[in-house]
Image (cartoon, rainbow, N blue to C red; front, side):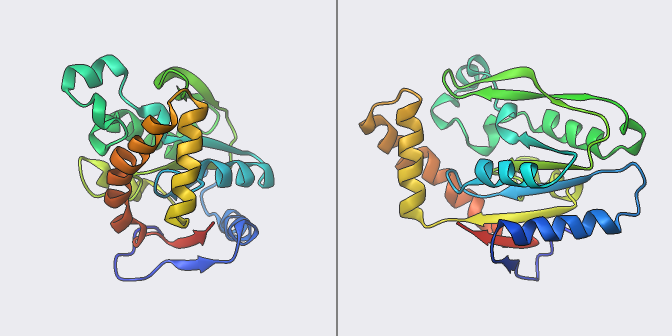
Length: 220
């Protein structure tokens, strides 16, 4: 269903409306033992983690898979000369992310527990096998910046998702949220503001075109 380039995303009123859409998809599923993969995409600070948690609380047999766990480790970023651009499309393990999505879509692995990396924001490092995606899940909510990005191999992601939702938030509010988040995880206020208006905002500009290809849109 996802990724229609000529159609504008359908605007949803709130998270409850999105829950109703997903419940309807689950009721109509023709894949016995299969699961739905729902993508939440948006700029940094748009509220992806918050909405994902609300969906998981409202929908039984649902888990959340953040894209952040697929950040490349710090030593790899340093070796590649990309540490100062951490969070850009080419600073993630796209191969590993795509491989896990394919495994989640494989109905033959319905009864198998899969593991995914998490992300420690205190040290800004991925944590291997931190997330368990247990057997029998009906829905996995995947949240991340580049689910609808069309560069650096990210174009392989959208076809693996059953539904995509673009999250939008006023830039001023989004910036203040991000600054507060960076300060909470150890940056000075000046450094946090510089990062938000520098690398984070550069990434937001890259993400923006893909939001138009989402199936639905939800504003914060």
